[in-house]
Length: 78
Image: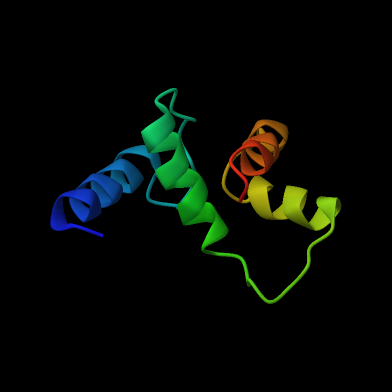
């Protein structure tokens, strides 16, 4: 990842997450949305397999619209 990409990533995360680490809104721009989805996915243990209910509970910690975020995980192949 280039320095420019890292700055974009960090700025996007800082702008869209509040101090409690909750997602303020879901960006419309695909590039920003992907950064935020990857940030959330990074908080999961890649070794585990999660049920839909577990994923919903995980997402609810960060945003109330868990259905949209879960769907975006699937659409983006995450």
